[in-house]
Image (cartoon, rainbow, N blue to C red):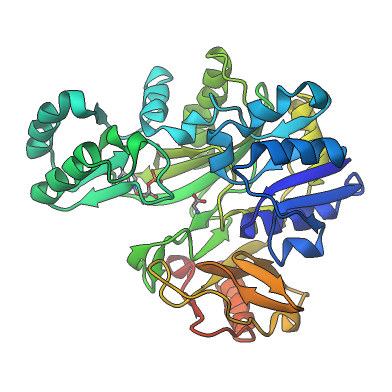
Length: 426
Ligand code: AMP
Ligand code: GLY
């Protein structure tokens, strides 16, 4: 099977690592990839918004399967674009079409979907310019804190948690009247604040059946003890120690099954990953968000714990045979620690040389590249999140300790990482 993987982060490095292990993978291309994915396949310098070049590449390289990593091409309809091409009738794409990707592409769509299928979630209202004044009145009486969500994709920045009414009204105005998060963000979801513990659960569905992958918890804040601004994720652990069979049963029966059945009932064809973001409140799961893809850095702990052959799993998706698959999971704990550029998530420099990559002990650890690029034989920083080290251990404590130790071998100017990933489970 000839596979094209779209994306360039740590998620794609972990997926490329796993795909390349399969005897079913004859040839792997990654577009655009990073210095890490290049070790497992051929990187192609293609922009993910250039659907036509992606289509041409599928034809020229006789691609059988496209696996889409990030949300943006999915929300913009890359799946529909590729499968509707008359010269690509045999092509399979893992990742929903534009309609299904709305689960992530529109917060208002996702909330309405949850309501239609009685999926537990925070109470909410939706506002636009048309009912702006009503929205301001609603906010004035809303209990604190208030959660504001821009409807469309906003590169992970579209959710605001406001601690007072003045701030909430000011932000609401900026979003609706001044398009702070672009045109799609002029629709705002105002949501009840849920206090609990967040976890992520990943499902692979063929549109009819689904399998549940190992759960994970990520650490979004840049600083120790979950302080400072939000990032794309500074680390992750899997499994999540407090998630037991009873909670997973509730998650499956109250959320996962109604979601997959709901998509089907509404005629939203969906073949791909669904990322369920939960807030667990008093042992009850509440849906915070859907993503139409795997998480990053969660993939870097979920995929290393997956024992199944990933290509076979993806073939089961395209053949709608997931009911015949059993997920096998490595019982060890996997933790990943992310090294970021100094200044991230604010401004940061790129282009610093990274040393020590070849010194990582492969016995217990895996190094995945995130924002890196190779130039003249050197690996350089090329993004905010630069690389991550995933380690296996008997416990969160063990695994994080190993990753932290290995991370000491890595150097680039202004390197920063959190040493306390998984701190609440130690
Ligand atoms: P989202 O982009 O929807 O995942 O939201 C980003 C982050 O905001 C989540 O990971 C939560 O930490 C937080 N968040 C979103 N919605 C709520 C809510 N209703 N209550 C509390 N925190 C929330
Ligand atoms: N780590 C969160 C995400 O991938 O959206």
